[in-house]
Amino acid sequence: MTTQTERSLVLVKPDGFERGLTGEVLGRIETKGYVLVALDIFTPDRDRLAEHYAEHEGKPFYAPLVDFMSSGPVTAVVIEGQRCIEGFRALAGATDPTAALPGTIRGDLGRDWGQQVQANIVHGSDSPESAAREIGIWFPDL
Ligand code: DAT
Ligand code: MG
Image (cartoon, rainbow, N blue to C red):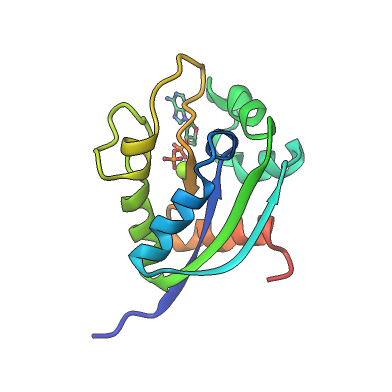
């Protein structure tokens, strides 16, 4: 059986940029075998983040999350490859970097910093529907 190629939206968050981990994250994606299709580095505004994180509006970590994500440059990346949505989520590890397994991006490179929002270095789309929606938000021309 063959599986159709798919795309996912990855973000290296401001903590990853600040700590100089962008290359490490992109290296892990490429080493895994996924292809970088588009890449842009900029500080996102709140409107874009509100759209991106709409599912979390009203949660206690929502405002700290938008503050954190707009605090500095983010590297937005579209990656491509069969099952790359699931595959990148596996590379990223669990949301809580303390619980994320060693070997994962969050488990190897992240930790709890005592903030209201977990700074966990990367975002990755969680389904084909999310990927299509998020790629439209970050790369409307793609
Ligand atoms: P993920 O990024 O693993 O898909 P998510 O979509 O549930 O996780 O949440 C988005 C981000 O919000 C997550 O990367 C870190 C932060 N976050 C989620 N749950 C949190 C919590 N309980 N406390 C603090 N920050 C949280
Ligand atoms: Mg999510």
